[in-house]
Image (cartoon, rainbow, N blue to C red; front, side):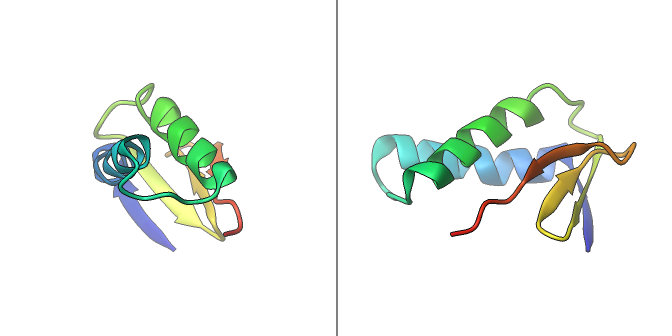
Length: 72
């Protein structure tokens, strides 16, 4: 579907995680867990690494699965 770099998704999901931690947003626990773990995984990549979003899953530039987006 879409191609962006780690920086793009890290900015978005780190902000979401911070909002969840502060209680500004309160999604279900499985969404909080996904957000936290996704940020942790993204932090292990170079900020310029391409991330591919395809069929509700995130892949690195080599096609390796990073994480699946959970159902709401």
